[in-house]
Length: 169
Image (cartoon, rainbow, N blue to C red):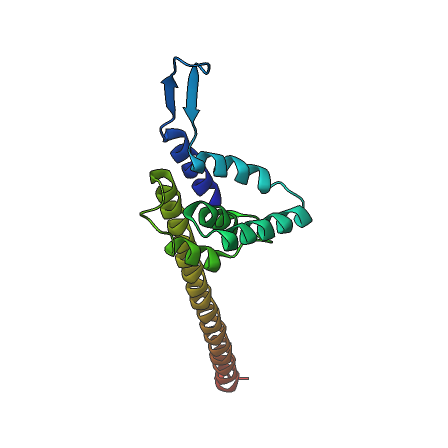
């Protein structure tokens, strides 16, 4: 599921407009790269970090968000919490951060990234609930099968006993 999200986010980032402008000044070309594309590139690097550096990065993100709770810092922290390695993943907290995003202050790609992350978390929660429900039904079915097998064994034993009594010697 996370792989699908990563691919989707990468495609989203790739589809975002990159502004290229000609300039008559000393710099011939100006390029604007969207935050979401940078966050995804950064995320790719972060998920490969050793455990200790990963936790330090998470703490740094938390501090940045506390200092300035703007959409940019909120999404950087939410991305790590939502889709980071298991040791730093906290999807419940990520979902709270995403739901608290000030949509009016966020740019288009940030809103899209937030929506994708939120959808991913909600789908994983739904999937987890369905898996738990299916496991419970499986356990109930296994218990029922065991009970039926026990009853069948008892009936078979009773039938054999009856046949032994009735059978002429």
